[in-house]
Every structure is written in structure tokens, then in C-alpha cells.
Amino acid sequence: MPGETSSEAGVQVAAAGPETSDPYVHGFTDADYPRVIEVAEDVYAYEQIHPTGGEIITTVSLIVITPAGVLVADGQENPEETQRLVDTVAGMTDRPITHVVVASDHGDHTGGNSAFPSGARFLAHPTSAAILEASAVNPNRPDGAPPVVVPTEIVGENTVLELGGREIQLLHLGRAHTGGDLVVYVPEGKVLFMSETYLKHIFPAMRSAYPSEWVAMLDRALEMDVDVYIPGHGVMEAPEILEAGLVSFRDAVQRVVEEAARFHGDGLSAEEAAEAATFGAIEEWSLRDSQKPRAIQRVYLELNGYLELNGEVPG
Image 1 (cartoon, one colour):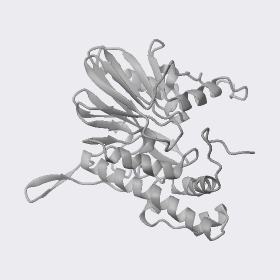
Image 2 (cartoon, rainbow, N blue to C red):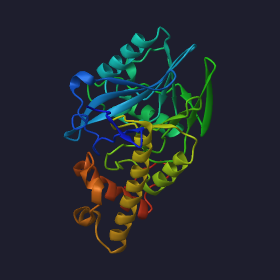
Image 3 (tube, helix red, strand yellow):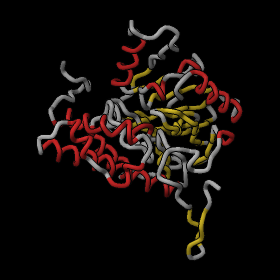
Image 4 (tube, rainbow, N blue to C red):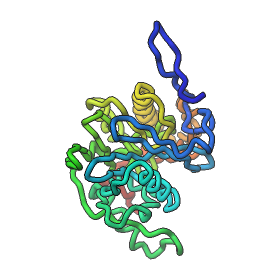
């Protein structure tokens, strides 16, 4: 059964699951989803199945319930799945969703934001807000695509919310998976929702990343006073397993950076490096086939000086 524990010297120790984000390999079925896991008092991880890249992983949102309303960090990939999240919150409390944090601006976390209550405050880092604003007015958006919700409030490096007597910190610890990554820290409970800066047992996805800066950002997160690290993708497990997974992910990002730099120094093209590079155990992680070439290409762009403040590559 998922989440079994074993006894060592009379102490119950959580048994780590397989090193994949595929929920079925962990022993879960469709009937188990969405999963709602209480990680601290009135703080929950909401985990839902997410097909992508020809594989199945899970996407995680954060729910914080307070007397004054509910904060959600990251929606799901489309209005139907985000409505399922909204309905789940309604089944947990009669308090409305008042705040939605755009921790990642990628579509699998924002594509369903139109399903949130229209009166909610949408908060984002300036970089993410600009990306969503541009997407909303893009003339090439497909017909019938769900509307893009443009954030209503811009937050800085460290924004503190007081919601129903509960402190919630919105932090930008540095550029990582995107240029505008936010993490959400709940001091009462010591919970850090990391969104897509932490991809548990997923090969480092660097399509819009800042590879070397990502390592430094993860180091900052690991230095914080945290009991529960929540990934943006990956199967939720016991707190000690989540922390160990974060350390492994940080090391994986660094290894991709170092290996790509080595091949770059040897004069190989990014395509040649992708063919030659091997990364040990992380080769077995989810999305390796789709993300490995992208990651190496992104490190090459960084090494060649093409990752400017806006993250765009000169034409």
C-alpha cells in the first residue's frame, strides 16, 4: 500500500516510494485522485494526475484555509481541473477563495485560472505577470482557448500577507524554473510550497530556466526553517522523504549544469552533448526523454550568454 512505514529500532520510519512522479507506479489509482494531504493545521497539498510528455505525473497546488478566506497557490492545467480544485475547497470550508498566487506562470499551473472566483486577488512576480499579460493579448492564441487571467497584484522579493490572523510569505528566492518563480512560506507549520522550482523525481525541466541560478535558489530554500517542502510536481510523501527528494533534485540540477558545461568546453554541440551525456540514477526519473535535450540546450544558452533579464534569446 502507498505510504507504508517500516519500524527501525522501534521508531516508525516512512518508506520512500519509487523514484518517479508516476502515481500508478507508487500504487495509486484514478480513484485516489485528487489527493488532499494536510501538511499542517489548515494547510493542504492538493495533488492531481497530469498527463504530459507522453507520461503521467502529478501536479500539486497549495491550499491555506484561514478565518478570512482561502489562499490557493497554483491552479491546474485547464478550467475543468481547476474547477475540481475549487469544488474541493468548497467541500472543505465555507470560506471563499480570496487569494490566488501565481507561483509558476506555465500553462499547466495557470491554464485553468478562469475557474477561480472572479473576485479573488491574483498575485504574481513582475516577470510572470508580464508573461501572462503578453499571452492574454497574443493574436495567435488558438480559437476556443480558455481566457488568460492577468494578475491583479504584483509582489516583490518578499511580500507578507496577513490573512485571518495567519502570516503567509510570498518569496522570490531567485530565478530558477522560470524568471518569476514564487514560493509560498507558511511560518506557522513551517511549510514551503515550492511550485515548479521543485520537481520531485522529474528530470530537471529547463525550457525557460536559468540553470546555474536554479541551483543557488534551491540552496536558499534548503537553508530555510522548513518542516515540509511541497513540490509543484511529484507524488506527495512523508516530510522527510520530500526533503530528501529536494536535496536529490538540487543535486540533479547541478549535475546537468556541470555535465553540459563539460561537453560545451570540449566543443560538442548541444545535440551531440545530449547524445553523449549520462546522468546516473536521474536517467530513470520521469520525463527524462523529453526534458534531457532541452536542459542541455538551455545550459548551452546560459554558457553562451544568451539568457538576458527577460530570458529571451537574441534572434
